Length: 561
Image (cartoon, rainbow, N blue to C red):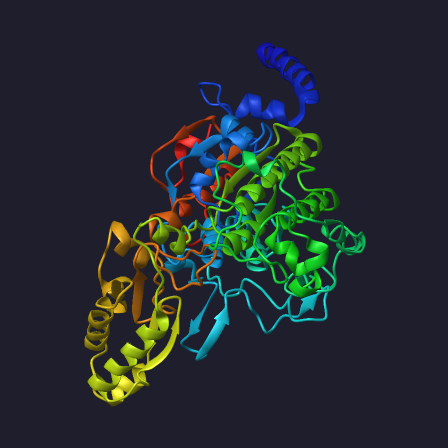
């Protein structure tokens, strides 16, 4: 009895002593392991910021490094973890599949977003990756907001975060492009916003998320923030210092409508009406700055990162893609855009330091695809390159169909270098689908500009582990993809002779940056091959959530503390 009597005062004393320390004391006493380590998921970041830089090749980071300042890309690399051999392991390498793959942790073979748009075999028509006729626009009278993630068949890391915290986490997605916002936001986002140009230049959304714009969005639209960028696009520094890029006046770039040449300065006020009003901002670095302005307002108004339940902000900087398509990867406009983005990233990090807490947020930065050099430029340098002569290929192919089968209507549709056969017609003719696929593939392989051709039968039943075949297979969705999949030769796109494009399985389209930074992240770098589908599992491990339900990637263990 005496021993029991003496124990209780000691127990009460300990309870009173540690009570003011609150929950953290409980973690210290009960949840440390023998080495004193507290699991990272017990102290997660208050905010995760996922940054997608549309059409960012890996070598932009190294090529423009000496032009960057200390607070943006340099801060992320020097204080974070840099994966230097990071790749897309599927094709087509385009915006919709890229954003979906980063956030789902799988490839188009799993999530179903096989292109920005594609031929739908069931509907017998082209469909847009986030188009949804059951939804209506919020914030505009046009159909620009009739979008949702309904074609993405699996969850995202943002969905899993919301599910993990019983829907108490907030997820907000922001991008100039609708697909750059809708797909990262996932199925459970509190909101996704994108930019409608034209006469108004407003941020809008969809009834999938809300019935009316939040007051802070309406106030931002009315503030004149977009209008403030109606100004001349001058180079950030003296053009003579842009030694990392080619000459300013070259035939490999496309001027804005109304310009005599694609050169600085670009007088946006003069070019405004002829280039779609506020739409012109998309093809300038000001589109990125406007995106960040809006994202910072979202952090403030939605109180992201304000408590211990992790929130998620998905930002996609879309203007880098528009600028790349117009001017090409070797242009001074692209360099200037990345130098200005560097300053915008510094502005973002400073804001997070001040308003969330320097040790309370985690960032990852990557891209949705890379880009190739302008083939005309490479060709002038005597580097093998060119353009698919689609008209000639189509004419020759139809002649082959008529000669071989007596008709051309066995082809039902085409999209994204894929050919869809009419299975019903083949069945009525008593033709073997596998044999027809093989016959057409053999024919197409002999055409100029075509590097390889795969059949759906090959991709369905083979198990490719490496090389282009594996990349094509990871982009092949059994229900949605075509019967014939064509791989153009390196640097040989079906594209106009100015500006850069992407979409292929070749390494210039697959190699992109990946940087992790902030709470729970080690400092360092790796040259081990990592893949785009590894990002979501890595963040899931950091947060202690379930993986997205279709994830096929693996956590990058060396990134995490």
